[in-house]
Image (cartoon, helix red, strand yellow):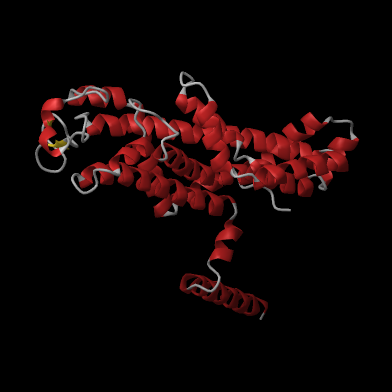
Length: 332
């Protein structure tokens, strides 16, 4: 079985893919904007919660005054319909909430999935069957219905972002568990793992020293795919009105309130939707790049039958012929 690629090799492969570099740059900018939300909002001179009644047309139901949603020198991206709250500040603070929930839920999913997967893979047959059946039962449950039920019965004073992190994380760790279990079952047959177990090493020691280094690549790859999925889930829950609640800003919550304004103020819909699309697309492209960087054979499989794949195959064949010709000339 092939050994995991070295860290330097992975970074070099990622740098060779322009799409991965561009996606990473976009995500870095988004994270910096989210972290610097208070500073940037103060630089604009606004905050995400202050109402500006004088900037909306009450006679038209609260449509922002001025073109493009009320864009001006004081409100760089306009104001929110109905309330007059600054859109630039709310988008920045919404990025903080959406990214925090997505990353936090991903951490919970990975932690539970790795623990359950290792326990199933390293345990005896009974433990493996019990944990596998338990995982299958939970996978069949309707996550959205359970999430709606949990968020409805939790007290209103419970922090909503933390609640979403726990709900999404506790209801979506099954994929990670299956990947870790399958990988563990394959790895524990290797000589160095078997030798460690025969040498008296306990399950925790075997998992920490022998298995986790080899599990890092598939887990990191899957986590990169989970982040954009969790962003969409958070946006969906907030869109349904059971996620983040005002005055806390999130992109999903903004889209939920924007559904009644898309004709009068299209910018109010396009701005959070655009940020959400860019973030999800960047995470998806970067996740695909990480997968192929950690496992170059995956890239070869994906390119089979494509024009680029045929060109690479032809180039490799030409190199092979040149090498054989050079060997024959050397022998002669």
